Amino acid sequence: MARPRSAEARMKALEAAVQVLADEGVSGFTVEAVARRSGVAKTTIYRNWSSVDELLFDALDLMIEPEPEPDTGSLRGDLLSLADHLVSISEDERHARRQVFSGLFAASVGDRRLAEVFDRMVTSRCVPVQSIVAKAQARDELNDRVDIRLVTELLIGPVLFRLMFRDETFSRPELENLVDYGLEGLLRAS
Image 1 (cartoon, rainbow, N blue to C red):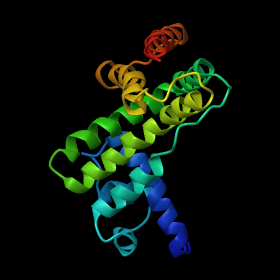
Image 2: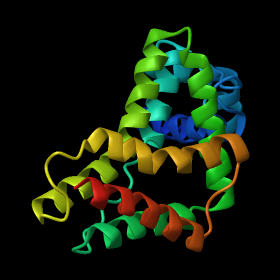
Image 3: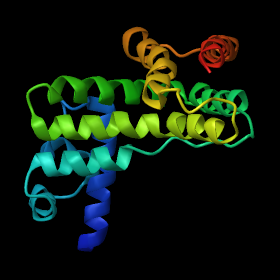
Image 4: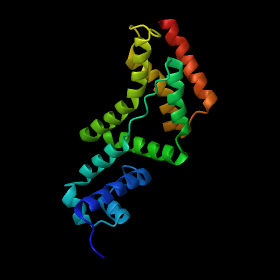
């Protein structure tokens, strides 16, 4: 059987790295595990990545996909649309995200480079809510005094808490209540 070309081997290794990260978390992420999963030789992996950390960073970057940024024309509609996306995530994907997120958090405590990757992951999860709040301000649904960062943390915090500490998600009615409770306070503050 012919050896796969370098670009093909790199892609196979990177896809396997994402799978290993999702299944084993940061603590179980090794070049050996990636090589076993991908069928790509360790020497080929090291030709493409000088260390396990570089491979880990590339796998994490591939996993950090931005959430959608809905534009329904209203603050409530946009928040519920984003919430619907969060509810629609499969249980397997939710478990994988939890494992990666918690493992990366734990590993980042003593590692500045991993802390930067963790911060990028958290920041990317905030972008859609920040965009939704900025659009609401542009439509005069919220005034400019509203602190976008604080609002983002207020809305994302409960979702992360439930995911990370309870390994659960919200039902659609619970998400509607969460959005409505948040909006009631925001509109009162505006």
